[in-house]
Amino acid sequence: MRVIDSHTGGEPTRVILEGGPDLGAGSLGERCALFARQFDRFRTMSVREPRCSDATVGALLCEPSDPTCSVGVIFFNTSGYLGMCGHGTIGLAVTLAFLGRLQPGAHRFETPVGVVKVNLLNANEAQIENVESYRYRKSVSVDAPGLGMVTGDIAWGGNWFFLIDGGPTALTLSNVPELTRASMKIRHALNEAGVTGEGGAEVDHIEFFEKSAGSDADSRNFVLCPGGAYDRSPCGTGASAKLACLAADGKLAPGEVWIQESIVGSRFVTSYRNGDAGRIIPTITGSAYICGETQLIFQDGDPFRFGIS
Image 1: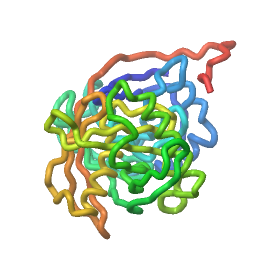
Image 2: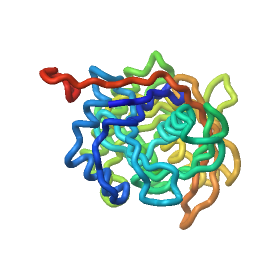
Image 3: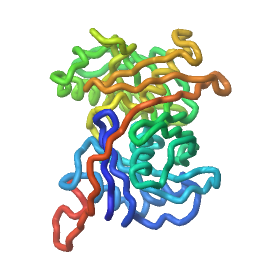
């Protein structure tokens, strides 16, 4: 399997160029379902240990079903599949530019949850216009063991988020273990209480945010992803969900810039325009860098050929 690794604001993306499964020519949603149903071992082989970091998001290149799109992509991580991935889309754009397959300018990428517009600004910087985002429920409270009542908003930014103003401790790298434990308790509490996104979808991303001390960023966040790893980037879909909440509360106007900082200090520059029915269309600008080009080898007899479960 031939892959290229990059990082966007510290968060890794692994793009599968060759050796992935043949998913046919259906819609991206249909192909993602087929991937999960019949070829899940390709996911576990490529992004689970011992070949990869738990934080890595995989991106399988596909032929788009929409002829206006430059590429189709299915995102996944150690625990399953992602509707969209903001840092991964930026990483994919920079990877394709590195390969000479994408020139600076406007492009369209097809994902299982819709078309994402991508403006490749230069070899390492891209601006993406995400899928429509919105707040689904405001001020939802759950009782999390050891934390008490925790209140947050449920919002969609390409994935489902529970967004909490303020964490159980400061959002610093030294507190990542405590923030991770608290986030997992909250996610479990949401599941136990039957709190979901629209249509019963699992709320599988937990996001704490606070004012970024000593910097010009508008917010600093900690995002726990479904596999249990924290997002090193400011999280593109999480930033989109955050913008949707700000817009719904009248705290951020269309076109106004919001700088979102991650727990490692990397940044996305974001804004939005109005969409339909109270929804917004977020724009996210960030940078990615190539880390390596690798051929993954899967030897017969390797007890961890399909990854450590």
